[in-house]
Length: 165
Image 1 (cartoon, rainbow, N blue to C red):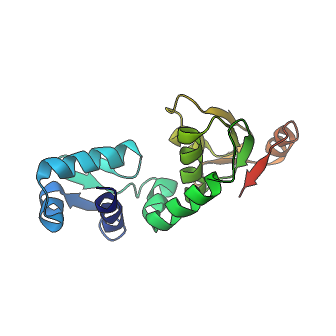
Image 2 (cartoon, one colour):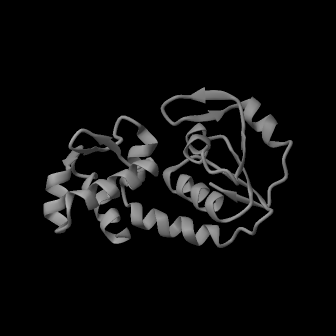
């Protein structure tokens, strides 16, 4: 199932929209199975469900980048997460691989995540065990990050055990 979902994610790197019927035929599974796969991928903010299928998140810059080389990024995130212990405070800068790292950490460890990325804060917002500190500053809508002197000043208030950029 996991392998099929990763293949479906890769399908979106070349297609903006894919139908449930086409995916079911391609992967030799039922449409119900594909709908469940698509629901899980939507819950992870990797695709958007539409009537009869799904579409890429290409209108959401960072979300769209999650789909490109997803499996490699996930392995990097999993490896980086192994370097962090429960109870630590980590700073995670913006980026699609870092978003997957934040998700992995928040699902598996009790950590405090400090970030300047509104995307990352939103990406993991529904995971109950994570403590998120979102730094303020000048907001850049295209990258969904806060930057500038206020962000730097805010960072000086924290000590972090690990930093991921």
